[in-house]
Image (tube, rainbow, N blue to C red):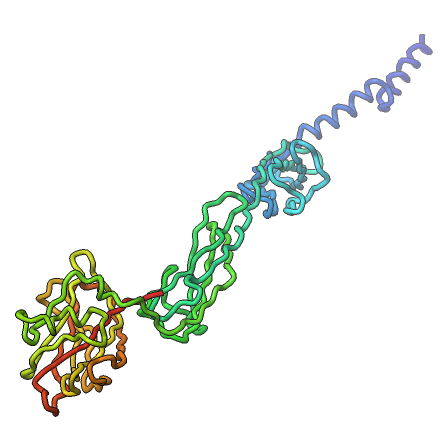
Length: 384
């Protein structure tokens, strides 16, 4: 019996050495206690910036907020990227734009570990939008191509810009005059702002709101003033202050100053110091913007010629605006008419129904200086 008791005790003793079942149970209990004492980190907040990326944008996976460890242990974050739900071999928080393409869905998952345990992952995803592409440049031209300085001209888009993304485009115009920025807003240049010989250049910028593309420049050198034909023949009426031997006779009525007969007809009146005048009525709705006129002086005698006058315009034949004035003129004289016209140019921005030549001085100093005559009058508008 003593022997039997010794074997059990040995058995018991062997069990207490940790190699028997009792010993196994003791080790497992110690490991479980250590694991139970540690807590995994929390899930980090994850955002991808920009939140609406296009093909030009790098993607940055950011933590907001970072994971925390309940036990205060330091944590390390691990990044995983997926493209259209397929993992890719990229573990950096920055994903370059060269890796992405339009319409792809990219997700970033981040988990935190304290060295013993890994916490739940945070996740964010974005869809890659097509990158905005710049529009094509428009083509432009100045019209008319060889403008006169009194015409006015425009910078015209001859081929519209187009946008590959279908964005709505807007245009902006820029002008230079002889290489200096001109104070012109828009496509049109007023002839009042120009001088013959100037070089004008225009460009047009097309914008989709993000990109701006500038056209090649268009350029024009301004020529001398150009005018249309004489328009006095379309007048509906003529008038004058007086005429010689009228109305009983028609030798010198005012119509003869506008009849295109430069050899045998003339408006003629007595002269007592003036003023005397002769003019045209273009009729209601027929207003004209006259900027040039020509005179053929008196026939019969040099003393009949006009020397000082004003060309005047009116809308009601009662109130007159001086458009151009001449003093001390020496119009050419040839007996019985046929002498050359003398032309005068001036700036006029208004259209008038009535125009008149208002004479304040004749040549005088000769026999028959008590008369005044004008063989022919022409009136022209800016032309092209």
